[in-house]
Length: 205
Image 1 (cartoon, one colour):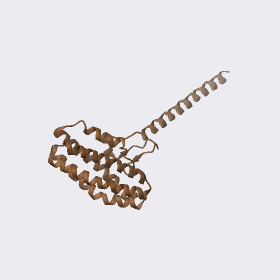
Image 2 (cartoon, helix red, strand yellow):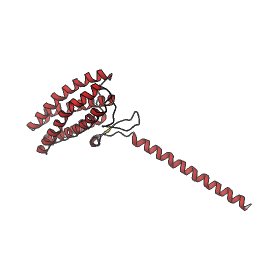
Image 3 (spheres, helix red, strand yellow):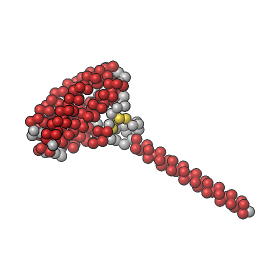
Image 4 (tube, one colour):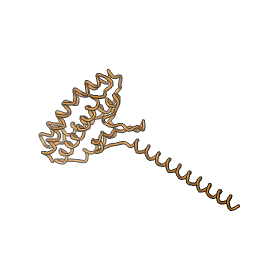
């Protein structure tokens, strides 16, 4: 009788341990899934994060497919144009305003070129600005005066750093030839913009 009682008790303990182990596995899996679907915004963009809520897959600045690249570039262009048009009105430093005008000119042309590339790739772009880019626009609205100039140039540094990462990766892994050519063509200009933004930001810091 004692032997049967011992076996029953041991069996119950094992069953309880198995249930606990199963629950822990479930919780860990859930947490991991949640982490991979988080939206990366703001300063974290510099690390190469891009939102992927719909798929639950981790997409970065360097591994996005052609359609995602086109959509992200369209959003980034719209963000940089909006920030630069604002800077033309609110910036106080002459060099900052000159830079803002150059960005408006160059990214307006880049947006037109992107439309042609999207058409060749069979991708439809929209005017919707992604949350991570909208966050950067919202940041600038909190600044005025010389603080505005410094923040605008800081955002231009971040934006072009991300652009360079996207374009360099796409120049090597694009599926569509038109997308590859577009990326290769813009890299020198983006690098120039980044260097200028860095130099000007240092002068208004």
